[in-house]
Length: 450
Image (cartoon, rainbow, N blue to C red; front, side, top):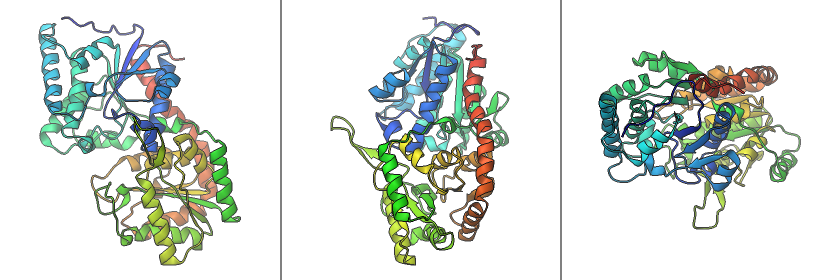
């Protein structure tokens, strides 16, 4: 079997979109809200630069998404299916592809290799999971994913690692393979500059790496009757007080793991202090939101449910009420779709967010925002990187440093008018950086930009 190699400059008719964001049905659309902020504009941007291309993806999307965004899904387990032998199968595909590189022929194929051969371009979107974080989602998943990339590279297909925050990779043996795979991408677009600096310091070849911005900065809100009703209820209860939003997640706590089900009230102390500051010193109405949803998967009737962050939001509200006798706290109990919750955040006077894409949703609308960093390992350099892109590095707060967090919240509030003006002036250039991800992929393939 002799696979065809895409000729540089010829039309891109088929794009395979894959990567560590390969998840079960509904997870990208109805789980972590930030995931959807990215995937919708990413797909739309690929269609912008390759208007005649079919996009096939291992990401498992709903029928509504596939129809609206013009994508086709292929089986998830072509990439990773959480079954026995996943890693060995991926390693075998690399061996087959190396054999092709040496002899010009494939001794055998696999369903994944067949999909690669059908494609004119392979795009890996892995967010911050092209790193040790990949293995948090499944045993051997990081290496398996890199094997999928290396297989496509060895088969001679144009490959792009797009809109990611890669690294760190601690395992020395894994690091060597990561450097090899990374160096053989035809293009890498990082969604913030910190990743590039860290990769360079770790010995990665960054000669084909470009700093861009996250596609989430392009995500469009969609106010609806439900959102407007929630905003009206919040303002009515606030009675003239400005709304200050709070979103925390399991990563913000000093003690892991991030998905721990039960937390003691004392673990909320620094966050409750921030709520007290917002209410008593700043005169605001604290609004707790969850930036993650749950849902009932098929075959049960679909229903959107409060997600993993909601119990944290509710417990924070209760701890703050008990510790400081606060009354001006509200908790949004209704699970909202991504377009709705972004619209809601646009009504906040200030946002305090431990979810980086919750911060993006606010910042992109000119809302002054304090970003709460991760409190335990594995730490995430992406938060600092996103803040650098948005020009708000002074408002990244360490949750272990109570005094530092309070100082940043005070300063963000005191300077909120100038911060808002600065954000509104900066966001057009950030949006251009976000669009640059797809522009660079198009340039790689010699496509004409629309």
